[in-house]
Length: 313
Image (cartoon, rainbow, N blue to C red; front, side, top):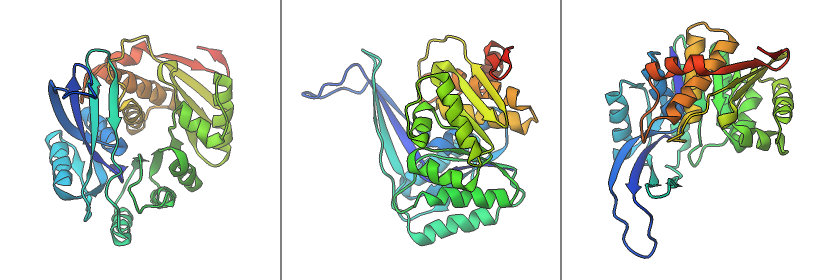
């Protein structure tokens, strides 16, 4: 079974206004609520792609109930640990007049030690896991080392691990030597503690992180594509020029596209292409929507692939 892990999921409350007015009342034209968080969005896209999976993590309170119900409505299976605190709600305000958006990200509930222990016991009890995507922010009370422990537990079960985190969470997680990590350009720069301006700089940084014990380093670079570095292989997949209407959840969609490739036994090249296609397809979706299988498969032949170690293909 394939699992995703979201230790700090959320309900994302999205509102559309013509323009923010900080001196008068601003009328909301429409709004929606949908389940969010890195692992949650990976599960949503995997489900859209027809890949069976189960979302794990913490939920609490009425908002936690809503999160699980909304996931169930979308066909996503869950096996969450209930906590005493309330699942967080994030606020996104989109300005129709100028295309800007404001994101207010809540911290989430504080997790007690026994609640974290319950999650670890649930992970230890998983039977026949094949793959897990792990990522996102950590709730209050959870040390970044939790990511290392989760990666280590899954590797003991011989499941492939894909870590998508940033800052201290990423630094701690790679100590468990995950099979894959997927930072973006900024997160990779923070990881190696230097600016990465050119593609060659990013390739070199990815090779350094690979040498620390990470199986494959994937770096998402927006319109510049996605890089994969592992064992002497340096691949780059670049999307076509598109009119982006959404920038939320693109990295999570890319992780799901990559996992779709692994699930179907594709090689690294085609996994990378499907990851890039999934992220690009979601960028064309308005609001809460995420790419579906038709969107991704129509985008796949439009992705340009290069083998950077052997020249352009």
